[in-house]
Image (cartoon, rainbow, N blue to C red; front, side, top):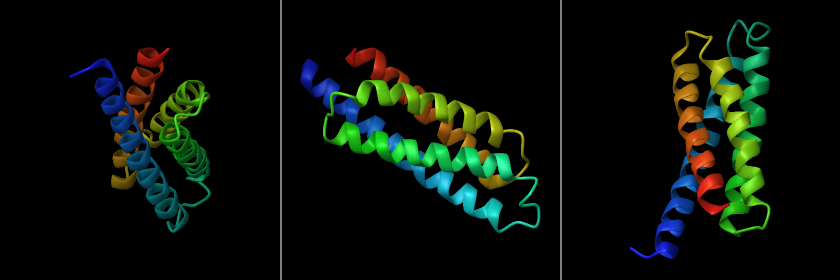
Length: 117
């Protein structure tokens, strides 16, 4: 595998991780909004929405190989970490799944930032 193929593979894997995280964050936020404890889940909803938006933007920037995608990967990883920390505090299946997805996405984004820098 050439260096270019390896980078493209890593880029595709990171885009997939961002899109999966986006899905899980949106699902988690919606489930929290639909719960009877919506006030208690406000921080979780906000974290999920921020994370989902950044994951979507990051995936778009990587897809077009924007000159800013490396910096955005760093910001996305931070948002994923914050969301994972918040979701991990709750005992709901959707929060657990979201936290796991956020951790995977954060790791992928960090690897992308380091590999391409």
